[in-house]
Amino acid sequence: MAHKPLFGDLIAAHKGLSAELKAVDVAADLTLLLNHAGLSRADLARKLGWSRARVSQVLSGQDNITVQTIATVAGALGYTFDTVFRKADVSAASQPWTHRTALTLEMVDEPDVASWMGRKAMKPVQQRFHGAREFLRTGLTLDASNGEYMMGEEACAA
Amino acid sequence: MSKQNFFLTEIRLDDFTDNEGSSLAEGRFRPVSCCSDGERRESAVIFEALQALKANDQKAAFKGLRHFVKLAQLGKPFDQLVDKKTVHEAFEPFFCEVTQKDETVWRYRHGDIRILFYYASGKVVLLADALAKRSDKLSEREKNKAKQAVKEFLEASRSEGGIQWID
Image 1: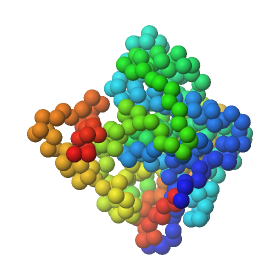
Image 2: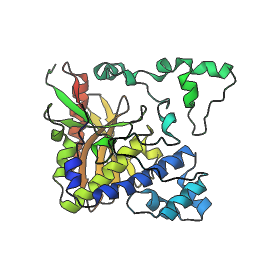
Image 3: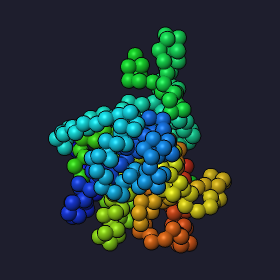
């Protein structure tokens, strides 16, 4: 059954809010890109010659930031961007950090909680990705740029 | 031990409009809200909290919550992604009888909107409350409400009836 948006009706009652939420998404995506690039807000401020307060404001999701600002921030992080349109029911394009997220190695559940949640996704990562260690011996590189040991999509599929 | 049902629902990106195609990252933090009615997601605490806000506050709250849920997709603690002014401990950790240790309620700030939350096991983030505040100071009532939400969640997670998820 299709997932009914919990807040759909309430949001629809606010004229223009749907578009404003897109601006929030852009700010959040820039925050995630910053993290993906392994830089801090202070690093970004230095690169751009901005104050830290300005970086915080841009990334806060409270402003309607301009396309120029998006390009400036993305460029400082070593990225560019395109405008990709899709039908609302089509999956969103993946982001640079998307395939990494599933492999964040911080999922150690307490046994009692794991039992009541009973979800496959809650199994410890070592169990789910036990093959990961083998890649060390095959010469593939593990990416630890963000301080966590993660691998790319190809490694996971293998 | 209580057998009373405790209902939880995850607040997802596709709970907002126009995002049916949003994919959910497997390693994400799951922002969840408890529901009083197992048949109605609209009985979620977070839904009722937002519904009760005045128009402008409600609009701001949706933006804040959307931002929060987006950041949750990365699966990293929020304080690693945003500055301390945005995410910090809401008040001093409190002793919880259920876990027999200190527990912490966190606060996420988005303009005048405050979202109080608790990191549970299994990458679950319990949304304890959402408020419109003109100052940072939380009243005792607001603190107690958040503590109670955490306590009830932890009790349910250890109870015979456990927790039931609503999709």
